[in-house]
Image 1 (cartoon, rainbow, N blue to C red):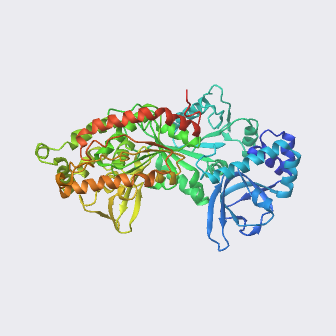
Image 2 (tube, one colour):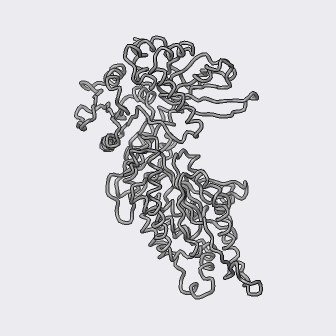
Length: 613
């Protein structure tokens, strides 16, 4: 029975692709099957590496250390990878520590035996060479190109979410992924071209080995999708989680507490399983945000908010696009959008957002600084960019008195800050929502004057996250909160593309509205004679200093971006929110002109998701 298990397990590994069953049996017989628990050490640093490990299920952490024991590099090896081939080939003590971080299944083979097998069998040698090369490339590129998962599981807390999994399988099929569905619904409605297997027979679940045999009949299918009721016993759920590379736990506003209770039990077995569990909220179109569920969110690495209903008036398609974000996650794609600061000029972001949405470029994560945080959070909340533009024009047009005085726009902005008017204005639209409830994960960048460090908000009150990031020094006092004195994030990082790379995005679009600066200050230009130069007011100087700082800090966070959109809005004053519609139009035009090049680059990340005609 052990030999059969090793054969089936080896068939799941990419090293067995294209090999005959006879050869897979032969290689499997020469492997040792390891069932490892979290914390087990497979190899100690500075010992010789004698074995190669094929990761079948689970996750292994590989850490490189120097002679003082300092960590030089740490990375995770997932299902379908190998550990130890290069280290064993050197024949020297290896500075590599290998630790199992969650319950895992591995096949161990001595390096000498592996070497002999690769000499004898060309296809096996090619497979192993490819796997090793992929690991090296992944390390060199910072793991920004993600491996497609082979086994994905959906657990449903309610029958209402079953339709979501079905649509996802159909979408994968449209993208050329030949999924194979294992489910527990005797009345399952077949999908054309998608083979399926029901693991519930006469009201009872079949054995794990029978399911493995069934999966083995479809070696050319990828991914295998397990579509299961979350009401099954915890032991069986744990078995499925152990072998799965990605878990999507589907809940509704009425059922999430049950999910939290079950996942809490599962976490006790292996806390590191959290890193592959995703929560999927299926929400009615009338509900703008997910319920606040910290007990549930703490048990998963990420969550998705999805609605299958058309959005109501003034709402964008971000909830409908939650479906596509799940597809991105299943295909190893994560697109980030970094929105830079620039005060009123940040209204150009709204036009960019509108064009990206209309052209099917669905972003998975947003990071914003100052005006970028404000527009980004409003969009992440589900507000339609066109409606946001109308609101900015209506809400931030200076009253008659301010329009009549010199530099009235500057004075009105000062008034808004000093009288704390931004909080009630933003709460009209965001209410008491928190960042973690919004349909799109969003991060705002601010700076703590006490520590001198940037602060990235991804949880907490949505309005507070905006106010902290737009809090221009001098115009307003620092916001004191939780031992920090917070001001505008643009003084350190004006276009936070680096934040998104750090959060796992493998393609980042940056939008900068401060790449160019108008060569004029207080009506003085480069050619103004000294005798004719006009003196600037203190307020004018403060506002100009803000602009100059933004321009010079523009490149700090934007460097790792894969594509940069730069609407030219330098002719607009940074206080002219009343012209938000004009700046949004410029942003839209710039984004439209950038689309061909952007789509070409995205096609290199995933040619099926972003096909170029």
